[in-house]
Length: 460
Image (cartoon, rainbow, N blue to C red; front, top):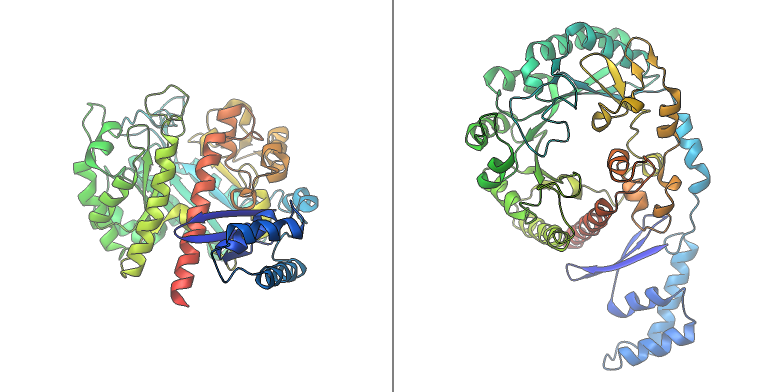
């Protein structure tokens, strides 16, 4: 399977199954587009007619192009066959029972009242609660006991707002550090916060113990304050921006993400990214809101062309700033064209429900934070482990090849089938497809690949 597109003044050809990326001229682009659909004679006649005014496009040049294409085919770099489908189930089965990451819901409560919150203002459709040290300790013990031979273990302190239970966060990190050497493990912690309770103590702790922090900011003040408000309806932008600036400066501008959400109110989210840049932030992520159709914040079909154009303009801005020596990172454009994820990751996806689980304040296990509160997906708890094996099997059996809609999609080995939670909430099945999200993902991948190709060409 081959995907060809034009972006940023480049003609790009992606060979889906080998991962090879080719930059070609206009005539070669057309030849490749027609190569498996027409005879050589038909292709040659079309190309000679279309490029009749171009003296470089000759009979001989087209024959040479055919030879180069055949050479790339023989090297497995163009029109490569799919050799992965038969191994998809087996690859995922090999990691069964090995957990590498937990999302600890340290607080099912929040000091903000964001109307677009998928977690129902941190309550996850249940009661407000905070995690005790005893539950958190058992969760860490569960992770160690079920991590097999893995050395690096990931733990995300999540909410709600985790800083509303900061003392327990600190106690759990202290406990993890006390056991990791004997257990031959290395805990890597992430803290996700809305910033309202960030102070010097939080900054000092996070800089010492957290390999990453995720800071919630939606960009422009008027956009951020539309949804990210307290329970009195007051916006939080003025309070959190100075704290985030101090936080990031203390981390020397590294190992953080400024994570925003764009909605129907700001499909022109590039303006929010520009605001973040003006504030001094350079490690950025803007996520599309995912909500029920008809919700005021939900993206509409009318928003789609605006959002797709924004992704293209974002790539242009990133390339411009890279050339000026002022680069910034956008999470969804991080791609390694020379290596990238192993084929296991490309086929199997994020590992929700198998390698990755969320833990509620009561110690219940769910496939990920977006399934918390969906009782049929409750996997078990941190004391007894996974007991709902049917639910876990549903996730274990889920991969890019179990979704019929993905079969002919060129981006399937980049998205790995997409987000199971988004699929479930859109279609009622973890093996479904969130089609709106697919449109956004494909555009992001085109932009990310174009950006990396352009930077590589600049270096040559």
